[in-house]
Amino acid sequence: MKITQDKVVELDYKLVVNGETIDQSEPGDPLIYLHGHGGIIPGLERALEGRSVTDNFSVTVQPEDGYGVRDEENIDELGREAFDDDIEVGSTYYAQDEDGGVVPFTVLGIDGDTVKVDFNPPLAGEVLNFEVTVLSVRDATPEELEHGHAHSAGMHDHDEEADVLTIDAAEVGEPETAATGDTMTMKIAADKVVELDYKLTVNGETVDQSEPGEPLTYLHGHSNIIPGLEQAIEGRSAGETLQVTVQPEDGYGPRDEDNMDELDRADFEDDIEVGMTYYAQAEDGSVLPFTVLSLDGDTVKVDFNPPLAGEVLNFEVTVLSVRDATTEELEHGHAHSAGMHDHE
Image 1 (cartoon, rainbow, N blue to C red):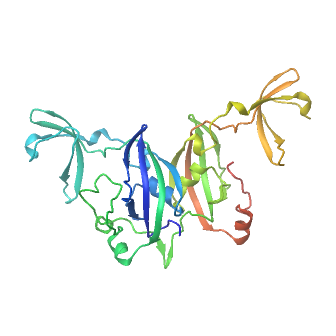
Image 2: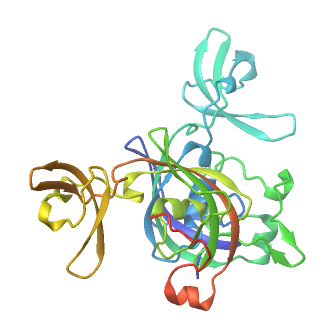
Image 3: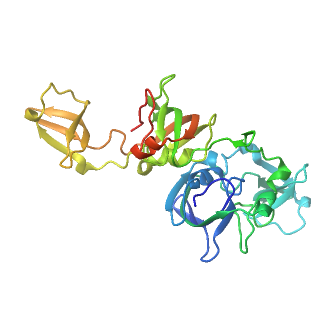
């Protein structure tokens, strides 16, 4: 069984921020949540979509898909009289807003009768690095679906408010999943054919993008696109637009200086241009691209690293369509579409 909408999932996880482990599940006390109901942060939930029991993987979640960006306007000052107890700098307290909801805040400092507080989530603005192992996946019970969260002894949500407050998603007006009749909006998952418009930026420069009317078309879950992008769009639907930052290890890999080589000029049939990409055939018959770095007499220095190896990739993506793959597409391991081009 794979992780999809309305499944109850058990996870072991570790959360690392700036090289420091700041949260992790305890042995025998996994994170248990109802998938697709906002029980965990969006970036982690999307990365889990389509995963199965025993899957073990790493996820990097950017602030906009985690606890949001820091907003200096969320820094405020309260009167000392607003607090019933002794105040500790660095501790988290809770205030009730006009709607009756509970809002957490952190005490930053105390100056006489003035208390400086921060209503930003503690992890706002942080890049979150998760190590995750999927322990179990099951169908939710009718009661769990009605309440909008999983029921299980020892359950804890990966949310800063979880120890104090759990809000039923239905009570706060969470948008319902789009539907037409009895047909739910199709989400990106394994064995779906997806069409995307995208723009790829590296170091502030646009290096690749889809052309109007010529989207990227690929078969999800079959390694047709780089892992980091594929994980980020898992669970998305047609019409969604998102920003995705992919680190080298989830893109084209780190640069490897051992992949530099020198070839003989006689190995080339045509004129050689520095900076151009050529192709060599490996012993197993596969084709290896390489880039010419320089010419020195009869020696050609080449680079077998992918051109974007070692680069942080910034994608702007719009999902145009999602459909079931045909039997032939599943057999071949890629999508069939006029004008198709893979981002590889």
